[in-house]
Amino acid sequence: MTAAPPDDIASLRAALAQAEARADAAEAEAARAKAMASNTEALIASLKLEIEKLRRELYGTRSERKARLLDQLEFQLEELEATASEDELAAEQAAARTTAVAAFTRKRPSRQPFPDHLPRERVVVAAPVSCPCCGSDKLCKLGETITETLEVIPRQWKVIQTVRERFSCRACETISQPPAPFHTTPRGWAGPHLLATLLFEKFGQHQPLNRQAERFAREGVPLSLSTLADQVGTAAAVLKPLHDLIAAHVMAADRLHGDDTPVPVLAKGKTDTGRLWVYVRDDRPFAGQAPPAALFHYSRDRKGEHPERHLAGFTGWLQADAFAGYNRLYEPDRRPGPIRYVLCWAHARRGFFKLADIAANTKRGKDAPPISPLALEAVKRIDALFDLERTLNGKPAAERLAARREHGITLVAALEDWMRTERARLSRHAPVAKAMDYMLTRWDGFTRFLGDGQLCLTNNAAERGLRGIALGRKAWLFCGSDRGGQRAAIMYGLITTAKLNDVDPQAWLADVLARINDIPQTRLHELLPWEWKAIREQTKAT
Image 1: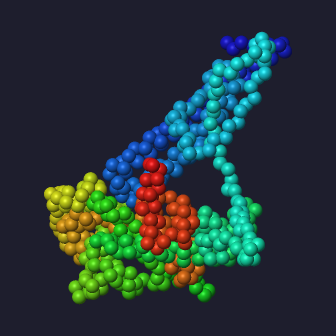
Image 2: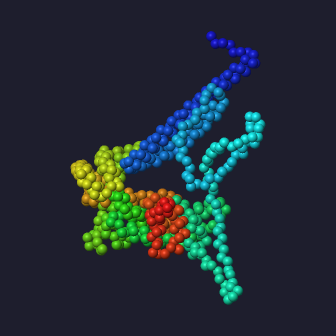
Image 3: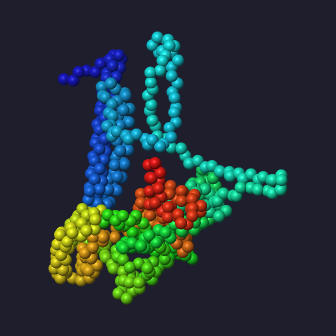
């Protein structure tokens, strides 16, 4: 039998207080449980991301799907960490209203100390003038506790005034004055750091000049678009000799990666489709000592005459796709000699992967084509070859060649036998047959890597060089002109080469622009990213 509720006011108030306390405790418990669950989800996401990064470090990127997975895990972790922190704060606020439930505090990984090179600003909290216990003023300092908080100062602008005093000789009345300091650009008004910011933001971070001008204006420095464009064009011309040195270094390689990508070009009332071509020298996969570098070229179309002109003096290996425009480069009577070609397995694998991508087909719903078992099997067989190549990355050419002869030839021969057998059973209109024909009709080009330890399985080095352009197209939409495309090719080559050598492109450009007009031509090579980096490291060591 349920007890009758109290009828006096004091009892009602007490019951209400108890009910409110129970409600607060229940709410605090719920908030604590929610915070713990959010923390667990964030921890799981963090561990998944760490595992995937370790797998990539050990084995490389297995597939396009795995590459997308890493991006998804990073985004998922970002959202879950924010949610966990939000729920932790809510749990603390709920626990503060009750004494029955303890507050929940997340376990966070220990933070690394802030870098020593950052300037420190001491803010001293005023000490008490008397003892809070007895009131005595006889206090002596025992030490101090320092809490560090990282802060950022908004970009600061300044005008540097260079003063040149004029003097007159009282003896001969000759007027003398120190020579004017050189500017990075003729009649220039922009300092090297500002120029480096303009160039890197435009070509490295894909921020068009109009957006930069808007941001500068909000910061109190109005600069017109034409003024900024003038400085970008002049700076690109100043950097051209350095670009030429990089071009000579790239063309001196025994092996190049080549690829191209479309770029919209502004035309009258429309946009045309131009091309940006890249040639990458990267000897690191076979432990080569030559520094990596990238060379870009621009053209208004995709005719074969362009790579012929780009590679006019080159006679080594070219790793590229099966673009017909390269064909004349491979002719035996070419002068100064034929280029030997090797094809890209990642490009060929992509044709099968599209037919075997279960995740992508699931998103398409009813309109998705059926998963091809043959394509799935082809991907698995090709991935076995990729697994072998990952273990050989960075090893000397002789060791790579020996491993390929021991294991790679067997894998490739088995793939060819299986593919030719299955192809004979398929209609020529089958989608998977087209992917097979792409490889089988060019089998010699795909298997040449088995006979040379310096060759790579894929052309990913060139595709990575073009990745920034693919991202940038969404921001800058089109090149303004053919000259703009040529200027972009120069800057992309400089910035990509700096990144390949683990050099901060903006810091490097600022230093180069400050020195390039004052350095002798015989020492211009000291400004190349790899030599610039080595000189700085040597200076720091001493």
